[in-house]
Length: 192
Image 1 (cartoon, rainbow, N blue to C red):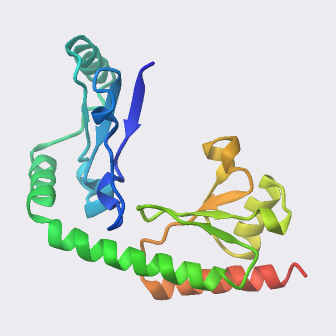
Image 2 (image 1 turned 90 degrees about the vertical axis):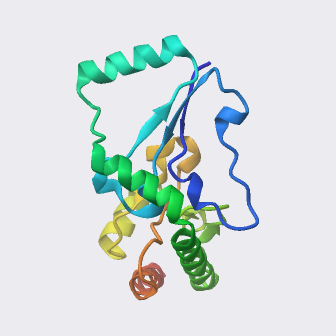
């Protein structure tokens, strides 16, 4: 089976956890998508690429990309990617520390609610489990948007395992995150 491995969040692995590229498990049946865009906030550079070990598959992929004209990398993006991965280690370490602080903040704030934080090994997009509040997926989406003022990606967009859950972006100032969590707490209190 061919696997397309989206590993754009691989750099955002918290200390104490390990990121294992899929290609170290099976390099012949994978198309690996990589970019420093998420971890170094350079998405506007169109800085992404694929790694495909099998020559025939790589040639077919390149031909299809050319046909669809989706190749957007440019000289600026290439330099930005190289600079990020070559010299951005200290900056990334500071970002990870801040995101971990935001995660701990979310954990503490949700401890007083029926919402469970699903502890991630990395990334700035942790999952929240809303099963205990008893709303269907559609009602949960409406509740989060209309009552808490949240625009989140709700779980069903990611398959059946995501039902009654939502992904929260914590890559922001802690004050902004605090306001969002306060709105959620107020909305939950209004359900009683």
